[in-house]
Length: 124
Image (cartoon, rainbow, N blue to C red; front, side, top):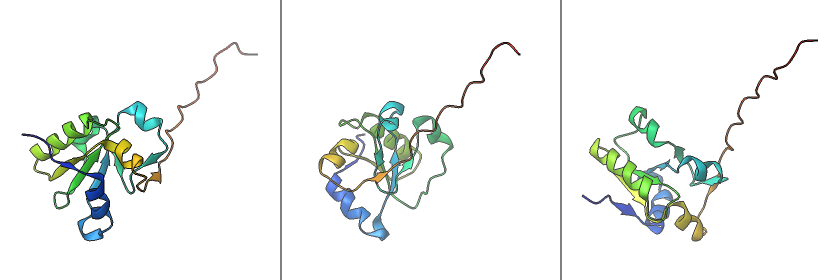
């Protein structure tokens, strides 16, 4: 069964109406996510590994997006959500199509810095 897709225009329209605004899940792979400074407005970051443990609303549509124009990751995540009883769709063209149309984005937090390693060495 093919995974439903939503166009950027339809998503923009739904986001402008609070009663129909879906939950947005940013499921970009680690590298594309960490090397981006933006996300779709109000999007929640969720990796595929976190999906099974995530608490998501069953009474709200979910739109999943990634950085692949063919929606490889987002389609897989949407299919998993649908199999678990959620109403989900992948954003057609991903975040690249959204940004290419100059649609609204918001800044995302930069990745957390790795903790500093303790300096090893001889004592004085």
